[in-house]
Image (cartoon, rainbow, N blue to C red; front, side):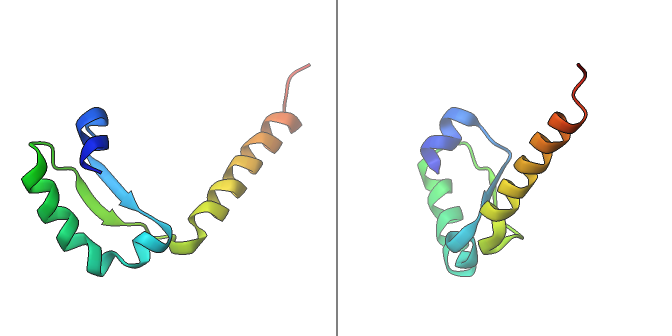
Length: 74
């Protein structure tokens, strides 16, 4: 995460899936480690979708594609 933060400089990092479900154990360690590794300190939070994040992303992508196909100008 520290390497990605150094390259991308995000304001927020969302932990999803199994990692996000363990956020209560991981967040204090991640935050402390980020403070020691570099000057960039994005806010780190647990995702609200938990294990459903990938499924919800796939559904959203499919709906966008279907909408584009259904309303495509010819």
